[in-house]
Length: 172
Length: 342
Image (tube, rainbow over all chains, first blue to last red; front, side, top):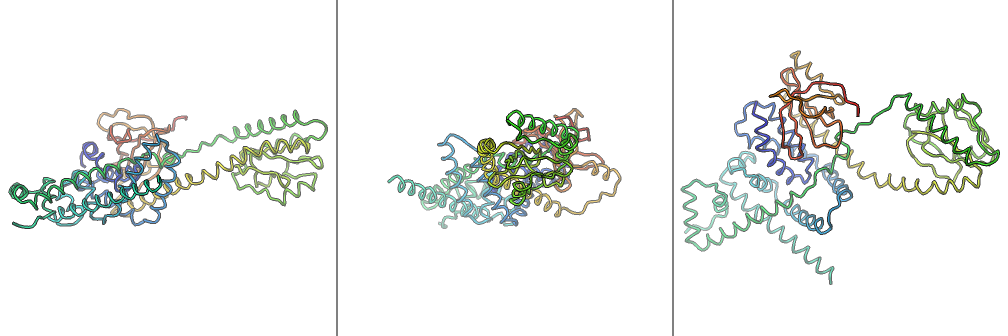
C-alpha cells in the first residue's frame, strides 16, 4: 500500500487544480481527486505515482465526459445557481468572471489532447509523464504543447478583443 | 542552419531536453535570428498560457452542496408530532373563537371527533394536495363537511380559510370556496377556520400576500433544487461507473464481509487515527456509497471535513480530510457508534 498521506500531501493540491481547470467545477474536482486517492489507497506499489494519479484522474474525467449532455446541463444549472448564490464586490466579480469565461472558452477551443497536455504541464508533469498519460511519444510532447499554447493565447486574445469591441460599441 | 523547431524550443524552455541537446538549441537561439525570434515568442506563449490557465482557478467551491452532503431529515417521534398537531389545532380554534363574534363559529361536534381529526394529521403522509374546485363547490353547498370520523358543522354561507396544508387522506379533508387560494404546503398541519364572510375576506386578503410570496419563492427555488438533484444523480452515476470498472474483488473472507457490512449510509462512525489510535475529529455519518467506498460527512453541518472509508483487512479504514484543500489529511480506522443527538 502506498504511503497515502505522503501522496496526498504531495499531489492533492496539484491534482485538484488540474481537475478544476479541466472541469470548471471545484466540488466535482474534489470528488474525483478523492476517488483517485481512494484508488491509490487500495493499489499496491505505484511505479510512477504522479503519472499514475493524474492518469487515473484523467480516466475518471473521461468516464464522466461520456455523459456529456447531462454534464452540460448540470454545469448550466450550477452556473445559474452560482450566479444566484454568490455576491462579491461588483468589480471583482465582473473582472474575474469575464477573465475566467474568456479563459474557459479559449481552453475549450483546444483539441482534447492539446488541452490535457497543457493542463498536465501546468501542474509540473514532465514530458515522459505527459506522454505516458496521453499515450503519445515523449518526443511529440513539445510540439503538442507549442501548438496548444499558441492556440490558447490566440483564442484568448481574440476573446478579449471581441469583448473590448463590444464594450466600446455599448459605450458609444 | 536548420529551420526553427517550435516543439524543440518549447521543450528546451521547459527544461525537458537532455544536456547535450539543450546546449545545441541554446547555441542556435543565441546565434540565429530566426531561432531567437521563435524562442522569444515561445517564452511569451508559455507565460501567457500560464496566466490564462490561472484564471480558471477562480472557481468557487460549495456551489453544489447546499445540503447534499448530509440531507438528513429528522423525524420526530409520532407522539411528539401528534402533540404538536393537537396544540396547533387547539391554538387555531382558540384564535378563531377570539376573533369571531356572534354565533357563526364552527364548533366541533365532539371532542372525540376533534381529537380524531388532530390525530389524523401527523399520520397523514406528505401527499399532493387534492383540494379542487369540485370540493370547493361542495363546501359551498353542503353545510356539513365530512372529515372521516371528524365532522365539523359549518354555518351556511361561511367562508373557509385554510392555512398550512391539506391532506388527501380519507380521514381529513379541507374545503375551500372558489376564489380563495390554498398554499400547496406539505400536510404538516391542518386548520379549518370558519369565520364570518366579511371577516374572512379580510383574513384571506391578508393571507394571500405571504402565500403568493411563498409560491414565488418556491418557484424560484426550483432551479437550485433541480441542480442539487442533478448533482446527486451525477455523483451517484460517477460512483457507479467507477465501481463498474473496478475488477471483481473477492469478499469471501469472513472478515471482509463483516467489515463491508459495517459500511452503511446513515450509520455514525467514530474515526481514530491509524497511527496513534487517537480520536480524529467528531463523529461522522455515512452519507452514501461510492463504489465500495463510503463517504462520511460531519453530523453537524457545515464543516469541510470529509472521510472516505472502505473495508480493508477486516476493518473499516480510510482517509479523513479536515480542510477544503485537503490539508490535515490522516489515515483513519472507523468504528460504528451511536449517532449523537443533534
